[in-house]
Image 1 (cartoon, rainbow, N blue to C red):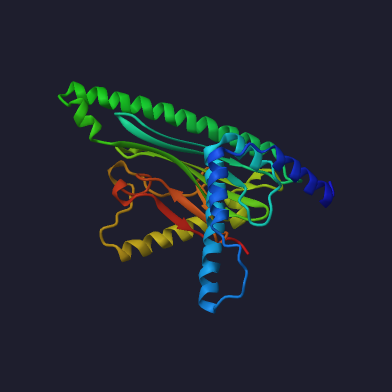
Image 2 (tube, rainbow, N blue to C red):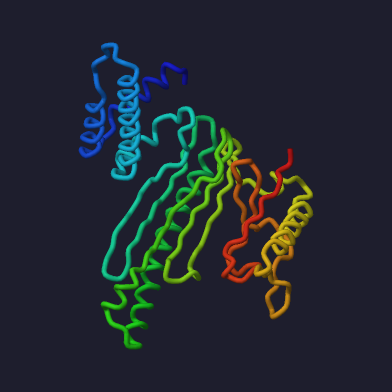
Length: 299
């Protein structure tokens, strides 16, 4: 498909977009706020009007983002427009916010987009997997909170007291790294009433090749030795800097860190380095939280 055909295709997609009424009103209001008078003005006034114009453009961009989250039809239509410049390949495909007497929930479902010439099979599988994970977590969270409430009431608590706990469930995502060919995305879910139910899923993708990236891809064939040595060095550095920090050492049945392997969780930092992640309680007491170790990628 040549450039002219791509432009025509984008125009057709644009013309078919079902833009929410609220979005149109917000954009129109932002545009009306930009002065149309271009008569030469004193320098101070020019700066003021320029700031207003920039603010209006920012408002339009905010409206665009709101539209993606407010309307599935709009988000789906926008996702079909060819990716241009630095526009992210990850969109919030669906977003839910609701509250009842027992809890409030915020759930954001990301969807990865592909460009022409990229393998879409893996991305399609991952998008479907993410939707399954999010839906399952939502249902399990609702069940856990219902069981918690039942036990709370059974031991003398009241409905009002339980409501005061203001339990929050959050499912969200973070794009850690994005380049022309690669993407690193982390999907997270947690419930603020218990740290035991926090989970993360890591997606490190080569979009051109249509495959998942591994530590070996980033650190070379000797990735185990390279990662292990650097993690142990950083652990010793942190222990020296914080006398209260504790890492499990095998005593009391807590094994602690031994080695990385092909199943070790990681994401890619903005520098392009793998960041190895150990969840709470994996190598240290839960009070010290998630432990992350950035390792220099192979040149």
